[in-house]
Image 1 (cartoon, helix red, strand yellow):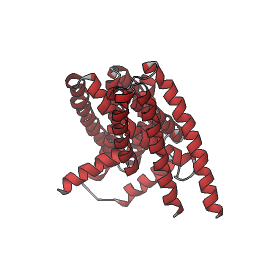
Image 2 (tube, one colour; image 1 turned 90 degrees about the vertical axis):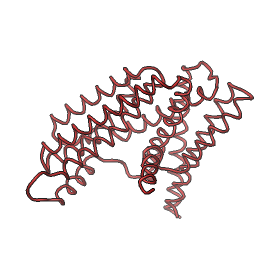
Image 3 (spheres, helix red, strand yellow; image 1 turned 135 degrees about the vertical axis):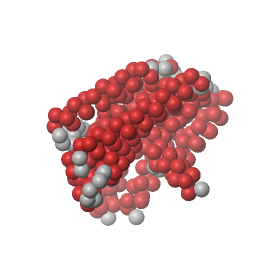
Image 4 (tube, chains in turn blue, brown; image 1 turned 90 degrees about the horizontal axis):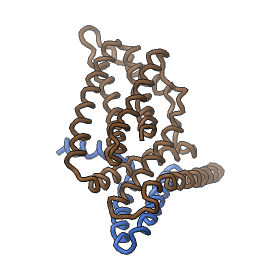
Length: 68
Length: 240
């Protein structure tokens, strides 16, 4: 069990190191999947905007952590 | 593709070189070379199993979704760190300082007699961990665009340049603009990741693959806005 947790932790650190990025990316994929049914060309811009929002949220969290 | 891969891999090779040099100069060159060789063999196996396996088994569209999402998350990690560094909220990476830290750690472990496995494993860990990131980038960029050869060639060229510089200089490459390179790589990985994730999910990008420069420009502009915003937040908090 400890080994499994360590493997998951290693993958998490290797890929993201930040929970906002992981959760945000899951949200980006779900939103894009929903929007792409309505408009295949517009969904790209929605994905792009969600990704930008994810970076902004992650940076805001980091900035807030530094201030407090 | 080769250039993107070379820049991304070059940054990782510079970091690996710092660790190998620290082991070679404080322990022995034999330990450093053995650890590096073992890591290189492990990485070749990783490329053979994951890279070639992915290309043969997984259909291109599915591959683009999987790799696109992974590249996007990975790219965002690099971009986030670069923005935090430029805005002063995170310390800039400095190879000379990293080298100092590593050599002090090496000197702290003085085991008399026999084989020095500490040096070998340190070199192995450093090269393998940094190399895994290179493998991830090369497979990610190469497989999703069906240009694995070009991506691998770019990484190989970067490895040769860094190794040659390491042999000639015998010191960490702290003149390399590592933080800027990481920022560029973050932008590239995030842009490719966005495009391929979208394509895999069924998005019809305007001008298809030629939308990449627009994504790059957009992420650059957004990064500039984020850095300016974080700097102003930092100034406000330090004057409060």
